[in-house]
Every structure is written in C-alpha cells, then in structure tokens.
Image (cartoon, rainbow, N blue to C red):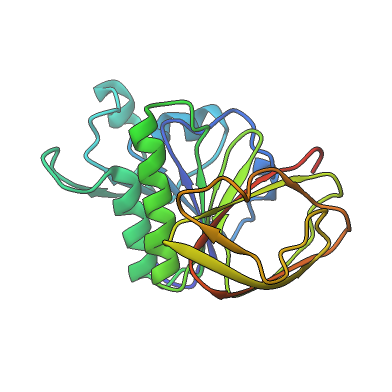
Length: 217
C-alpha cells in the first residue's frame, strides 16, 4: 500500500446508502478503506476497497472467503481498546493521508456516534482534516481560519468541545460570530444559518465542532 493518497474514505458498517456529498465524488486515486463490516457495505455500494481493517467480527465467513487478494487486510484481535474506525483512522495518520471522510449514518449506538467525534478530535490533533458524512449532514472540527462554500440557507451548528471557544469574526452567517465566546455547557451555537455563498469563520482559541445540514448540495 503506497502512502501517496490525498484522501481516504472510511466505509463503516453504518454507512448510509446515500451521503450528502455523494459517493460519486470518490475519485480513482482516493483510498477506500472497508472498516470491518463496512466491506459488505462496499459491495452494496459497488465500491472496491483497497484495504480492510478491523477484527472482522461483523463479516460472515462466506463473505470473508470471497474477499480478493487485491484487498489488503489488517486484522486486529477482538479484545482491544480501540474501535475499528479508530484503527482505520490511525492507519491514515500513520500514512500521512491529509483528508479522511468517515461515512456513517449515525443511526447505530449513541456511544459509537460519540466515539466518532473523538475520532475527529484525534485527526484534528494530528493535523488531518476529517469529517463524518451522513445522509443529511457533515460533521467536522473547524480550523483556526475557515473559508467554506455551503449553499445559502444551510444550517450551521457550532458546539464547543473545549471549555470555551473564542471567535474573532465571521462573514456569510445570519448570526455573526464577531467576538463571540461559546462554552461547552451551552447551546448558543445551535442553528445558525448561512446567508452568503462563501463563508468565513476565524477563531482565536478553543476547539469547535461544526454540524452542517445543507438544504441542497
């Protein structure tokens, strides 16, 4: 497996049939990683993973026997501290892949959904741009300076993951963030709305989660 991929797609067991950004945006030179039972989902979506990572407890023996040798396997024991998605992310960190898309409908266990947010934090701490993409939403951690292009009327909710997040300024939002502070115990940042085709957000401190719900994409 070479380390020249610029983007990795983590297809999980809970990847939805459609994602808001579209599976058609996967490019030929992107890395597709089947996360354990996500291999079955890859087959349903007609995607060809180059790599399978996990303890393989969610794949039927018959399907496991059909996996071609062209799909590299990294198998872990079932008794482990990390989730399979975290193991896949750690592979991407090791291989210096700068962008990771985690496909997950967020319809499974709530604790696993929270663990995906922890995965985003780990990626952020290692300088990787990661996002969770579901059927209707995009979830990511903002950088210090952010220039985005989401459609007007898209809902943007911001949740401070640190004790406090301080914003310097913003443009293109219905409710400006100029000199605004969000705390991790308040819901003040929920349901802002994008008002211009290009958006700009600058932070001075803190770590903030962005939940983006486009009306159309």
